[in-house]
Length: 172
Image 1 (tube, rainbow, N blue to C red):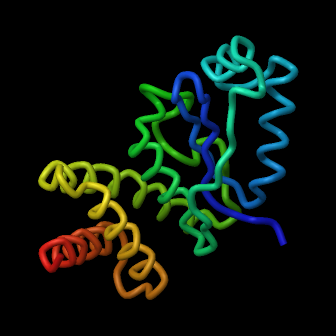
Image 2 (image 1 turned 135 degrees about the horizontal axis):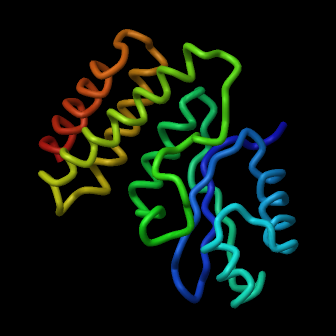
């Protein structure tokens, strides 16, 4: 079975990253390599550094396995964490911009969640600069629980997740 989740492509000399997601990560990595080796990658910044430093200067890493249907949400979290649109290789600020999911209702929910969690998460993390990684992990975990239980929808489950993360932060 193919591994699904979030991955990064890192240039070792520069530290810049590309954050992506796929239902088949290994096939996607193969496609990225094909594109850059042919000089046809959609990220011109990634293409330029690949041409400059060569394949050996890049590493590929799976950073999160995702199987719950909210891959775009997690991808957005990591795009924000690595600031990969500004200081990396991603060309679009919003995750999932190239893909159209067959279930339009799920896609719409993912887009709403992605936008709202980005805003909410960034605001809450400013309140906890010393433990931002803890908060990010707690929120991600809480989101995973909230989305799988379907007890809350839209912005409410983001608020619930943030509240839960803050409670966990205060208990540590």
